[in-house]
Image (cartoon, rainbow, N blue to C red):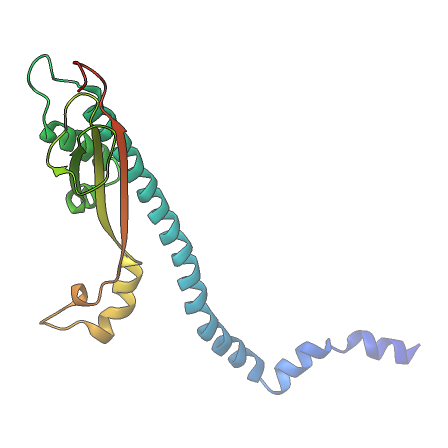
Length: 187
């Protein structure tokens, strides 16, 4: 029975090791210091990819709204149909994604005569009835902007170039084409 008591009163094996050596605690801190930055980078990357997908889908929605306005013939009766009207609609939709997206996006409107959209087309023109019109938005998404700024600042920031010289981007480009509605006789 005494042998049984001595086993109960002894601390578990893991506690005896910690008390004797004390190195396990330091090893845990070192392991955490090695793994934590990678974990943070991974989680930040997931959020960044999700944000990029959100912006990409928002740009696609803005393009759809712009091409719907461009092909509808809205403003023909009042002679207010213009490329600027379409660009304003697209920028209004892009502003919902954020000020930097709306200001950083490039919007282009191109038309082709008839339903054949081969060739370069006419840039800055909505086309006539039954012509093909395209609205396109280009945007350079800054990759891991906030995280990269925090990590790279001590290493690469300088008075001359700063972080803008090393900022990687992903080009997001969305376009949609439609035939203009026949608001007048088609040729």
